[in-house]
Length: 277
Image (cartoon, rainbow, N blue to C red; front, side, top):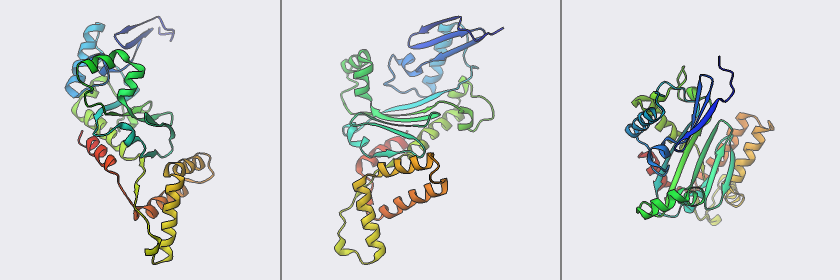
């Protein structure tokens, strides 16, 4: 009978393995297990090979193990320093924002986190062994690598539209794999981005509506869309405004500024690279 008490624990490379009665829990990055670093991304075939490799090392198959958390990420070579892209990220609806200028931004709500960060800086701080190895092998010659990571920390089957708990073998099934990649892209597109502001000439304003929109746009740029977004989020989470008011005000911000804004070349580059995955 399983009592829930941890009977034994150990590691297979970077993976933490815990045995408790009949329960086995495996925690860690399959990418790092397979490549020795999570700098590289596992495609579907490599994911299957990683699972088979782990089966051999453990001495028992994990294909039918339940998956309760899933982290989906890609390291993307960029044309400019990662800090150029990070400054355009503002907020994600009903998520708390943590921003470290020049290094990373995280949106989290407990069940889900979205991270965008400078992968080279992260390796320098947390995994110097991988950093020096990758550098000596020439993988960091580009120098500018952005990593976008989606972490699903619960209710995975619901997120993927499944009635049953997701199994390890489904992760490299073509249908589920495609769903996961699409999910990763869709969440990215929901992140609120700061647009570039056109030069506004009040001399050309021809109506009260245009004047109000111009003032609102300049004010939004001055205050910061991220600050306004976070304020609305706090008001909504504390029930000071209801959901309909939250989205109404968000729509007002977007519609009032769209006429005087445009998407930056940095965001276009990043979105193109995300969507072409």
